[in-house]
Image (cartoon, rainbow, N blue to C red; front, side):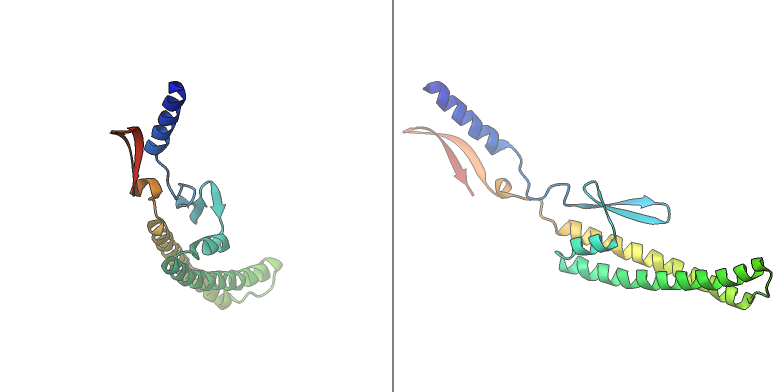
Length: 163
């Protein structure tokens, strides 16, 4: 009979002294620098732009930041695609032996150059949104706010939980 009480008390002590967290490391979003930008990870899963936006919806401030970043990204992509077309058309014409419009290619190159800072603006604002999201996650739990103690009273040994 004493052995059962020993096992029970030992189990409560182990459970009471162990750390339990409401948020795991999988909930945090990490950022890795890659060629041409950044990749966003939640746990080991890579988040694309729409998944990142959906994840950040739970934090209002981070969501506003990522929406602002998305505007910069949309403008950057529009400028880069239009610029690529405007450069590619005269180059294709020149390769085919026609008379290329180099003014069009120059304007296209200018649009490509304009898209670079817009793209950088997206990544810097997205990084700020992720930092805001990560800072908003709580790392405390029930066990952090409570105290479990083994106490000896006049009636015997017992566990006292205060919170």
